[in-house]
Amino acid sequence: MSVPSALAGLSSGNVGAVLERGFKVIRNQNWMILVSGFFEPVLYLLAMGIGMSGLVGTVEGPGGQPITYAAYIAPALLATSAMNGAIYDSTWNVFFKLRFANLYQAMLQTSLGPLDVALGEIMMALFRGFMYAVGFLGVLAAMGLVTSWWSLLMVPVAVLIAFGFAAFGMGVTSFMTTFQQMDVINFVMLPMFLFSATLYPISVYPEAIQWFVMATPLWHAVELMRQLSVGHFTGLTLVHVAYFVGMTCLGLWLTTVRLRALFLR
Image (cartoon, rainbow, N blue to C red; front, side, top):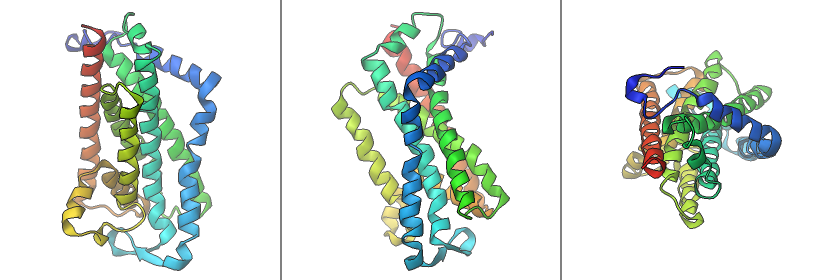
């Protein structure tokens, strides 16, 4: 497969080789880790959505329409699931390959270019995010929380969300050299999950904090998923989509540049 001359030094057009290796590893070693990550948002939904729904009652959803508390947090948990699947696959997994297994260094001694490696690893993270999204949407349907045909778009949107987080996560991980530095990722992700209006409306915060929350990627993911869940769209819908398109492009550029700087000096 030929590649444009502008990418000749970055890609050989053989991303499939990276994907083939990734799927073989999942089949032979990592399938249990892949499956286990699916249950976290489901448990949150059961504990918060069912356990507290009777106490909370209905809440205001997109467009001001009343919805149950379970239906309010379910799209947010789907967005969180896509984020978690992509981040864990593109950070800790990449960190081990980068700093201990020296896998990327070996790959780049072949005809593969840094863009091939970046796209291959990010697409494996997308596969994980896709599997989580499909499984979680099935749980929502079984619980009667899917009320609009627009909800089917939550799966490709979950892939877009995963793409943004995976691309950016891999780029950031390329700067990490110790396990202590990697702990910063968990330090960032947990507060982002708790404060990105996943379990309650953003309106509970003071205005200054609201602007800070609205700058975070998970808030955009949550809001986009909530709009899809009921089929209510505004001008902000395009803003949410554009946020992740930009995040993906920035992450791909950062990852490609970093792999080239690290191994193709």
